[in-house]
Image 1 (cartoon, rainbow, N blue to C red):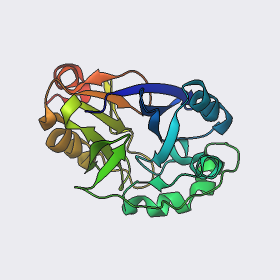
Image 2 (spheres, helix red, strand yellow):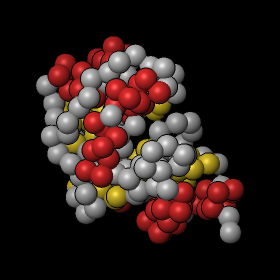
Image 3 (cartoon, helix red, strand yellow):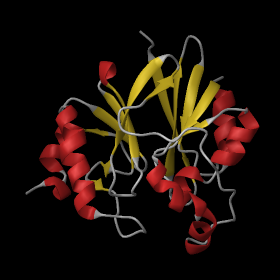
Image 4 (cartoon, rainbow, N blue to C red):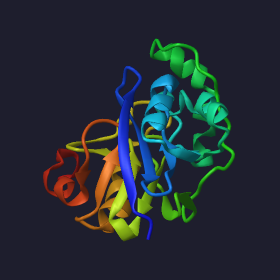
Length: 213
């Protein structure tokens, strides 16, 4: 079975975790949520000699998609994700840039929208797609059951959860996504998130203040 390596490069003023997953033997891999600072992302790709096969997007906020169009063009690869429910957010990426005082960015159109039950290929490993709305309507996560590992974007963080005060946010839907789709995957499942440190669902079940009844 493919053994993947993971790396993170924080980008944008929001310190968004642009994530890399790759096979250390073949060097095939993906870039997840290239939010900006494409030169920094390309430098990391070169440093690890990653042969990027596709770009994966968890959701349509600017700090996760701001560099996607430029990076896809530079690498000649397709963009997959998020769920089509985030299409209105993506179409308003210029408004998002203005709202947060960020430079103008190019909008992007995914080559493939994702939905619940789809799979995405990461260097030969098949990751399941789970639709987890709440932070945004079309947020998806990428789960690899054989390695007890998931990329959760901004659904859940170590000690916190995604904000829901942005357009399309829904706190009740977010907590439902976490409790009904993510926590049932198991306490031993480790996750990488869109900002901050990694954790496990078991640790968050016990200590995350947003998940206590």
